[in-house]
Image (cartoon, rainbow, N blue to C red; front, side, top):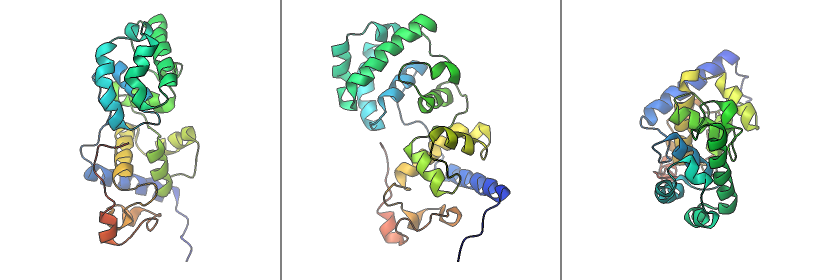
Length: 235
């Protein structure tokens, strides 16, 4: 029997209920990239493209010690930096972005990471996703981090049918209070990494099953589903 169309009010209520339940499931949800300064977070997020957070966290202690400031990135030796970050993949392109980033920060921002979306997205290697990570986690400016996990889950939850990351960001922003944007991003990413996998979501043990229109995409048998649940660190 076809599912009845969901009203806008019902969608908002269900989305916020899922957010509350995710909060109970993942009370410790946080950014899984290691950093101590806005610059370190910005660099780590750039390195995380097509790479696991675990791998980035293995590389960044050496990188951050070698290049503690924007000026250090601007003056870095290309070959030396490439060797340090090689294991993160696409290391030549990433090195190019980091060298240009350091120079841009020194030339136009006094060596400091800017605090606005408009300024951040003008930096080399920085798009809206990276900017929202930095704004939300370094500066406490609410932002939605629309990565592959986020996109997959909001589609499964029936929160939006949009596929463009920017359109997804705006659509979800209309459902969830702004103050929750950053922590919602972490909760969705944690759930996507731990339970709601791309290929075989652990539907049979998911506490959100009764609220999810995609229940059944993965195994619904509890024993089978429980074997799919993972723990960190993650990609």
